[in-house]
Length: 134
Length: 134
Length: 134
Length: 134
Image 1 (cartoon, rainbow over the protein chains, first blue to last red):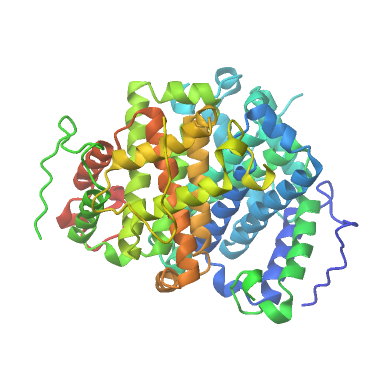
Image 2 (image 1 turned 135 degrees about the vertical axis):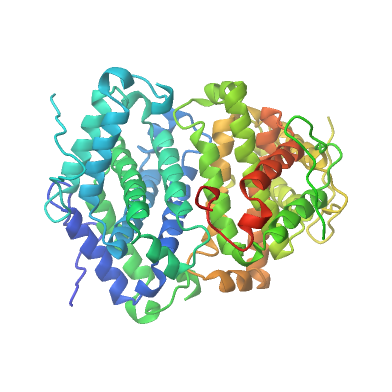
């Protein structure tokens, strides 16, 4: 398998509108395989890495209120770091799906369907309570 | 805007091979908008939700070693729950990208490129150390 | 070793004013040893459990703003659950200290001293920025 | 209020054997008040900080197995960092207890009592399953 990364930080070839989940999964898998890192990528370890990266994302917003947290996503230098953190979260999610054979699009569709039953529009509109408290 | 979820858990219409990131982002955004939940979805709150869901995913593997964690992903009942947890993580990631206007595919590509420089194949192969220790 | 828990939820014999860290560490260690759970309590696993419990604590405050999060700590039913979550976090912290031989009081004292240098009163007063940005 | 930190990293005056939870809570509260940081320390924000610090602790053990994670706690340079991370976790736990008025020793005692009922010695000995699966 030959994977060539010609992308530079100033020229990005991928975009959400045209990139499938499978495309990204393959990128991540190729990165892992080239480094022989599959041996470290158990579901346990990947779930830890995912949680640790989520923590790093959260650190950008610790003492801010909600409005300030949006402002921080607009400051250039910080925005770049935030993009890196959310990218890390999704990279580990994709790799978790790779090693466990989970189809993320199908899993997300199923979860949104389940959530729609827990949170019917007429009951949940404008409310943040958990479905057990609605 | 009309969004209809005809999908059932036994019939899934989406699959990673054909679903773009933008498709999933739209699904999540539609779900949020129907419920008027955008008011709760600040970057701060979404990063918390993401970290909390990562914690729930991790709970499936707490006391298992790496090999056992893979076994757990194969048990039917548990697998369904694990699929739900990783779906939740990605749903919140997609919504985070929605509210901040981040293109995830571009961010992931940029991060993989940066990682490739931190972890060149010849130095990183088969090693789990952080790049600062390679 | 005989450990007897005669405490009931309505009668609590311990209190912060008179309980040392060592007292609590012993309680947790006894609980673990009675169940032969030391085999599962590696630093890795305990750090995961700690992070997972932190996530559960956080879930009580996901969509609340700061003021509402304080209100939630005052509602009786929820307060009990919040007490359980923070107890879990500290229990795992104590057990982490047990298995690694860390003296928590000394570690906390050292960390507060280090923090006092990073955040001198005159520079940090009333500000939430990270020390690198002060 | 006068709080003086004469402690240096080479001379530590506190130890688990003689330090009460209340002693540590006061230290942390004094540190916070001197900096007028109570305004940032809502339960929500403190739970986030706690989860983020747990994530940092976890990062030391991401790709290690259980035995290696113990080895890492013995390496001098890394041990110091691990001590700092667990100290941060407990500092935020103490401050969470401060702002919510929770007595940690009582909460821990109550939780251990509840856990003892969920995990009776004869059923739980040597087993890592959740109580719902025992």
